[in-house]
Image 1 (cartoon, rainbow, N blue to C red):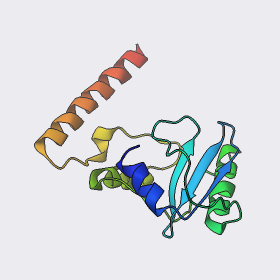
Image 2 (image 1 turned 180 degrees about the vertical axis):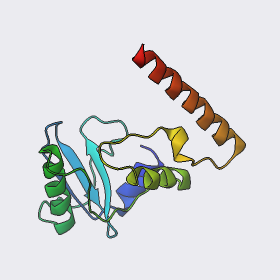
Image 3 (image 1 turned 60 degrees about the vertical axis):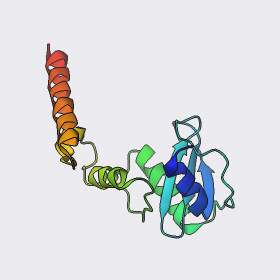
Length: 139
């Protein structure tokens, strides 16, 4: 367990598991929105949740429908209320990730989320690694 999954575990009000092309996916919600989605065996999977299984829950059903459409290639974005649990930095990263258009990628360095000189140094190093990786791929 970690702080994020512990927080979700405490706040979770309903859950369901859906079938996807990548395997079973656990969806968990709180009163505020979708709080988690984990594939079986995934790192930081919360394990069994005490919340009631509710495949008929409107938000979980909407999330499942949107995910099925995504896997069918019919959509590349999601319109769901989210209840993001994590440290302030994690939540800032997740908000920045939500702004990336479907089918696009960004490196950590380009998200400009550093708050300290150490964060900026790490971001700069990651940008150098991204550049080197891109150079090696092109060769």
